[in-house]
Amino acid sequence: MPGEAFTSWLAQLKPGDILVVVALDRLARSLSHLFEVVEGPQARDVHFRSLRDPIDTASPQGLFTLQVLGAAAQLERTLIRERTRSGMRAAAARGSRPGNLGLRAGDPAARRVTSKARRASYLARLVVGADAWLPAVQRLRADGRAWNDVVRYLNTRRATGAPPWTSERLVRAVHGSGGLAEPALLAPARPAPLPDQLLAVVASVLRSDPRATLQEIGAQLEAICEPTPRGGMTWQPGSVAHVVARARKVSPLPEAR
Image 1 (cartoon, rainbow, N blue to C red):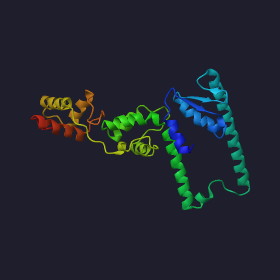
Image 2: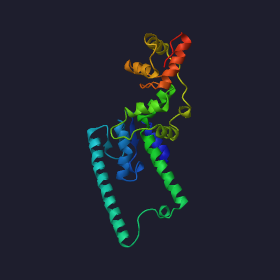
Image 3: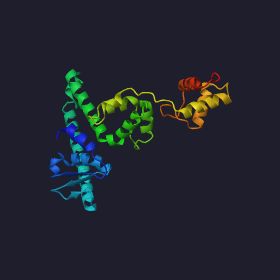
Image 4: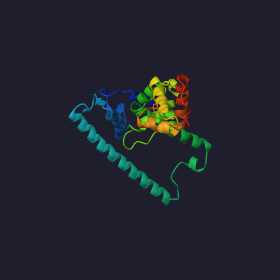
């Protein structure tokens, strides 16, 4: 199965699903690769079963076997690192420098290949973890939320140690999610209609204090936890002015400063 298609397929597994393979060698190239493949789905409560090997993570014995394999994979990675370092030290003693010769020479073709590989690796990691962020993005964007609001929502719920989202990074993730996200998610968000309750609240504030500034009105809206039209909780003067203008069309109000 091609790498990108396999990664996309893994991302679609849901809690309670069972990943079944005929044998371990049909799933991974090595112990370390096997643990990398299984680790992501396992963290999402997806079980793994091999028909020819004594591994079934739905049972305590199978889970123990997988943990033993994980320890062996860690040992394998450590040995590979030590051999690599030894090889680099030997090469340095001979006067050779480690690294990509094309990159050191500034070869444009080598830079393109490296950049493409980095993008592919980055997108593969995003797709594997898409079930943790994509449903929220789809729901919030369908409600007309702006990217900044979606980012704030995701960052309040991201896993410990995970890098914070930015609007640019989230848009790239959606754009490169391997077809998991609908293209409509990238369309500009349409402003949601202002609810009558919000207009009534702003009108009440202005009637009770005709000399209130936009900042003061915004502070009162924040104090009563009135969300902005985009669903945020911080009111900017421009957003307050927009709501005041809409409220004034409904009924005469004093001018806000």
